[in-house]
Image (cartoon, rainbow, N blue to C red):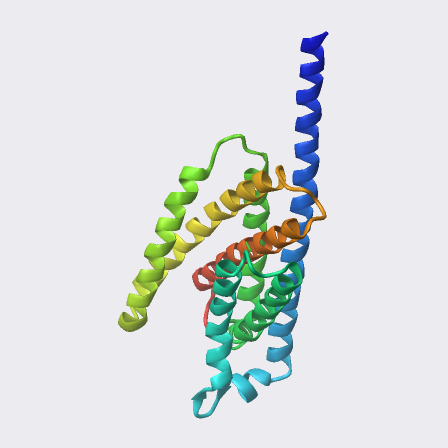
Length: 240
């Protein structure tokens, strides 16, 4: 009888963990998709209304707003990461919304650099890859921690390579960086989803700390998707 009770307890605990993880991941993806929708709408609106040439790139070159939109999102990521413990859940949400909005302004320039066919192809390709790897990360029983550590080292490597290539302007190096970038963010998608699933299994749904974790998790997955999309766009994109 005691063994049966222990077995039932284990089953109940596993069921509870699964339920918590599903609820947590649902919140993470909700925040992520909301952020992507905001980014996409603002990027489209800026391009459609001609605001790119009015506020970002004029006849004299890039404006101050262009540089703010390009670099400010990194500041928001750092603030959310370094100030995570001190920030409240509403503050985290405001920062995430502001981040997504600025990313939309920044990404609006792709509409004057690439044609819509290439942007659409890259977007649907990124969506498909992201969806598949998210499922893999959520369902796999293989521990992806070591893979994640390797991928983050690779990410540091391509950031350094991108800085170097900014001065070299090598098309071949740019192509190689894009290929490696697609591989890295494909893997990071699965790793981050698995990491967030495990976090979700140990959280109390509804608490402030859980909402903060969900928003920060959404930021992680948002960055995985956007970077996957941009690297694919560089590979696919034929310039107008």
